[in-house]
Structures are given as structure tokens and as C-alpha cells.
Image 1 (spheres, rainbow, N blue to C red):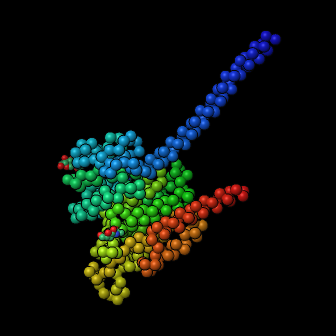
Image 2 (image 1 turned 180 degrees about the vertical axis):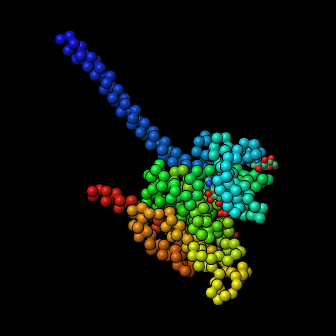
Image 3 (image 1 turned 30 degrees about the horizontal axis):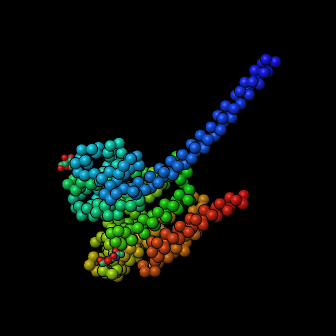
Length: 349
Ligand SMILES: Nc1ncnc2c1ncn2[C@@H]1O[C@H](COP(=O)(O)OP(=O)(O)OP(=O)(O)O)[C@@H](O)[C@H]1O
Ligand SMILES: *[C@@H]1O[C@H](CO)[C@@H](O)[C@H](O)[C@H]1NC(C)=O
Ligand SMILES: *[C@@H]1O[C@H](CO)[C@@H](O)[C@H](O)[C@H]1NC(C)=O
């Protein structure tokens, strides 16, 4: 009797607090889910738009509270610690380095012959800072050094290796790959309509070379990194470009970039080589996109949807090719159409 009463009593007396605890726990978990969702989208945005909201000539990395002015020689020399060589191109040697606990990339001029390209690259980095361009952290002209945000996944050339890793499986989807391809076209659109005029991505004579100019961010977005060869096109000033002074060959470059008299045995001459415009970048889009899309079960369907626009990109006559914006619009439309198809199919199951 007394035990029953006690038990009942204890149950009864526990009753209110248990309900309270349950409600409190439910509320807490809701708040927690809400907060973590928010922090996910916040870090997502922070990662993508790290330097949006920064005043000009400032930078901000993910874990910094405030923007900081671009680092100058004195800070680069005193506060930067070189860790290891992570990249070497014709123009630059790139070292993973540390600045106040932040990983940065320190690029140094590799060969005096390329000083002009190096300085051009730096001036373009300064002029074109945007979420689509690697973030400039500082530079020192005395030492020919440039400091940028470090991206551990490295260049787009590493895409397959990175996506093959177990912990990145959730990004190895047609959605993520199509988004990367779309960002690549968005970068071309930005360069072709940039604050520094219509710029052509000249350092792109092969697929590998082209891929090595883009970096893959931690959250699987794309930024353009190497701006050492961005000559300007301006039709109203009759300004056209040539990507270098030497003969270009191979099937990656656009047909107008090839020496037109190669089949008649006339030796190449830079002065006789006709100049061209930004439509060379458009010609290369299908090949780069094909690499980015890789092999997923849905890849064939994506290629099918992109077939028409890619065909136009490969027009022999550059003037018949679409603009980067035309291509971008199609990529976005294909993405949303395929997302809708996928969810409609899921609904039917
Ligand atoms: N911020 C960075 N984070 C991670 N890796 C980087 C970064 N900057 C450069 N790298 C690596 O270093 C390589 C070479 O860099 P970059 O293209 O700037 O050098 P380059 O000498 O201008 O090359 P090129 O021969 O194409 O002119 C890149 O392809 C990339 O793998
Ligand atoms: C840059 O040059 C200064 C001398 O002007 C030198 O003390 C410094 O170590 C150099 N920094 C780097 C990163 O090479
Ligand atoms: C082309 O040059 C003219 C004259 O300098 C300039 O006004 C115009 O903005 C330029 N166009 C582009 C697309 O940069």
C-alpha cells in the first residue's frame, strides 16, 4: 500500500518535471538544429564570400573577426612563416605558409624573365577581387611576392582525387559537379565583363594548363587563381589578343589560335598571325565541363541537356559562338530542370 502510494506519489510528483524536461529537451534540440543549420549556411557563405563585405584593399579569412588591410612588405617579412613548396609553374613558386595561425599561399617570382607576367598577374588580382577570384592577402613588390588565401584541395586538376576520398563522397554527385562547371562558366563571364575590361584567359593552351589555373575551395566552389595572362579585348578600340608569340598547336586551343598557313608549309610568323578575341575561351568550355562532370550515373543525361549549347561553343566561326552569359543561362536552366525532374521522380516512387 505504502509502496504503491509512494510509487504513485513519486510518479505523480515526477510527472510535471518529466514533462517539463521533455519539453525543454525538445525545445533545446530544436534550437540546436536551428542554430547548427544557421551556422552551416553561415560558414558556407563565409567560405564562398569571405571577402564580400570587406572594404577595398582588405581581406578576411574564415576565422577572422574583422577585415584586415592587405599585408605589406614589413608584415610579410616579419609575420609570415614559409612551410613547404606546394606548386611550381613557369612564373611562380608557391609555398604553403602561415600568417597568425592562418594558412596562406606565398607566391614568389620563379624566374626574372617572367617579371612582367608576374606583375600583370598581381595587378589583375588587385583589380578583379571578387568571390570568383582567389582572395589577395598582401604583396611585396621589393621581393616579388604575392600572398593569397590557401585552398588545401589545390587546383581543379585534383578534382577526381579529392572527390574519390571517402570523406568527400557527398560532393561526388552530378549536382555538385554541374555547379562547379557552372561556376567555371560564371568566372569566364566575369572575366569577359570585368572591372578591368574584357579579359581573355590566355594561360589555357591545354586542358591540364586550364584546370591548373582554378582552385577548388574547401566547400567545393571554384575560384580563378592565376591571372598572369589576361590580355584585353575591346572591339571599339579594335583591340584583339594573341596568347603568346609562339605557334600554338593541338586540338584543345580554338581553331583561330592555330597558324592558318600550317598546311601550306609557310613557317609560323608572329607578325603574320591574326589576332582573336574572348571567344577562344568559349570554344574550350565543352572540354573543361566534360572533365568536371566526370563519370556519375547521371552524367550522360547532363551531357544530353548541354549538347545543343556545347555544339554552338564549337562553331568554327568565333562570332557564331555564344557569349559566356548565354552558356551560363543554359547551365543554370539545365541544373534547375534536372533538380525538378529528380524530385518529381522521387515523388512518384
Ligand atoms: N592559393 C593556393 N592554394 C593552393 N594551391 C595553390 C594556391 N596558389 C597556387 N597553388 C598551386 O600552385 C600551382 C601553381 O600556381 P600558379 O598557377 O599561380 O603558378 P604559375 O607559375 O603562374 O603557373 P603557370 O605555369 O600556369 O603560369 C597551382 O596550379 C596550384 O596547384
Ligand atoms: C624580402 O627582402 C628583405 C630585404 O629587403 C629580406 O629581409 C626578407 O627576408 C625578404 N623576404 C622574403 C620572404 O624573402
Ligand atoms: C572599350 O574602350 C572604351 C574606350 O576606352 C571604353 O569606354 C569601354 O568601356 C571599353 N569597353 C570594354 C568592354 O571594356
